[in-house]
Amino acid sequence: MIRKTLLFALAMLSLSACSKDAPEFDDYDPARDYFTFANTERFVTDHLELDLDVDFQKREFRGYAMLTMRRLDETATEVILDSRDLDVASAAVLVDKNSAPARFRFGETDELLGTPLIVTLPPEAGESFVLVLEYATSPESTALQWLPPELTAGGKQPMVFSQSQSIHARSWVPLQDTPALRITYEATIRTPRNLLAVMSADNDPLAARTGEYRFEMPQPIPSYLLAIAVGNFYFAPLGEDTGIYTEPELLDESVYEFADTQAMLETAESMFGPYEWGRYDLLVLPPSFPYGGMENPRLSFLTPSLLAGDRSLVAVVAHELAHSWSGNLVSNRTWRDIWLNEGMTSYIESRLMEVIYDVERANEERVLGYRELLGNFEQVPEDMQALAPRMTPEAGEDSQGMIPYYKGQLFLESLEAAFGREAFDEFLNGYFETFAWQTVTTETFLAHLEQDLLNTEGAPLTRAAVEPWLYEPGLPADAPVPVSSTLDAAAAASADWSSGAMATADIPIDVWSAQAVIHFINSLPQDLAHEKLADLDAVHAFSETRNAEIARAWFIQVAARRYTPAYPHLEAHLNRFGRGRLIAPVYQALAENGEDLSLAREMFERAKATYHPLVVMWISRGLDQAPG
Ligand code: BES
Ligand code: ZN
Image 1 (cartoon, rainbow, N blue to C red):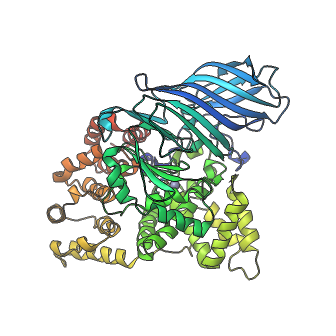
Image 2: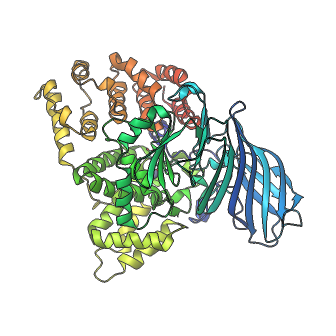
Image 3: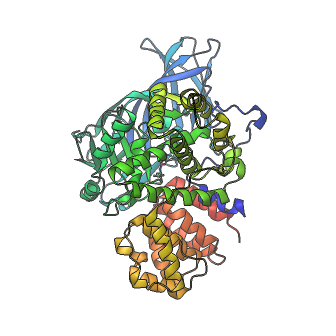
């Protein structure tokens, strides 16, 4: 039962798969990245220079990647890079402006990890050298979605965007694709003249549309934060250091929705120290963007499904902004430590929501997260429920769902509760200062926690008390339980209305937050009659809601209960959005309701041409493994 539902529910982190040479658990090294082929103990990269043509006809990037590398082991002559579906035409080594050709070959392809690219260095290469690779991407690149004009808001120009996290940078750049290393980068990108290129770098809001764009990223970043998008993008400012790139059709709406971004940035700085990256801009992409948001430095990528018209879903912006500290400034050493990125970011996201909106709004979102977490504990195998599990490509098969996010957040909230907000904020500030521009493992975090908090005089917690959070499944018995009075009221209304004690028209939906509406829907009892659902939809029009998260909650219920009158709207939802979170659980609910697996497959066939390659992978795996 557990396995069957997993791929759907957990696809979001999607490191799942089936590598052959996974190491033994006994030798598990928590500081080693098992998701790269790169021999980083022998060579490291300090800088990347890209020179790429963006070809929409062929759906390929073509050009050069130049890696400035250092040899750590003087006897080493073979550099192993990560790649996936890359066509490499030549390799050479630059030493003092002279070029010496280098031999290269591909190793054996692994379905999850891609293909090692092995370069034999010529004798000219010294301790430091530039490795020049001439290459092209494949139209199947897992990181890139090539959108025909029909899939954009404007409908006239094509678009392409990347999603490198976690291990897809290697499908558009040959490199050492591991969060354990940091590189600076620069790029020259040539595009059709009427389109604009933007990257996770120093975008210029005033850039002229010349078809040739130069970028620099002087702050060192892990490879998963390499990002690019090319499309009919225009810019609008939000505040002094913040603004929005998107298609002109979405610009006004986006400016309204994300108007609080500058305030979020200033609040975050006042709490966690200076923002180290220069500008902070948003890029609002088409609906096929597979995530809610992606924290590409200086330029968070966002789904347009956040455009609810009432700023109700902007916690995602607070989240991506928060990654500028937790994740981008201090990064997880390997994907096994992803809670350090996502849990700490979810914690900070809530803190920002308290200040920008109010404590109740933050608590509503905490409760929704907590509910999701409890659901995940029922689906994720126990050995993947620890914040710091033993994660190898093989063990990662079940991934962790949202556990790194909400269990991680709850862990930090429990520390805050124990030590007090002031002391905990001081600890976090010290953590960001100490580990800025570095990568950390859970064990490094724990050592720092011991030093700064646990070992202080009169500390209310010991190391033994916090270890279960990190190494054991589920939640410790004394874990905090988030509470929201408005969500309690929504749950009570759900029960009252279901039992007939409250009339449909009296459900105070119009005065509720979107989060309360979602909680109301999530709290509906199992055995609700279809007439009740019909009544609810007739009066409150959930099937036609503009709010993507309300729609998600509603259509999960519609599918789970086989409320077929709403199926046309459900299918419209599956066609409107391509963000995995919004659609995968709806497919899952259809596939698991006992009747609609083939209908789910048909709907997927009709919709999938509009989906991102990663989302196609997640949903088809889920449907392939569904029972029945
Ligand atoms: N960095 C993540 C997205 C991600 C995680 C991509 C793991 C690939 C692998 C991003 O910051 C994120 O967490 N997005 C969430 C936002 C939400 C939890 C507020 C999303 O997309 O839903
Ligand atoms: Zn995140």
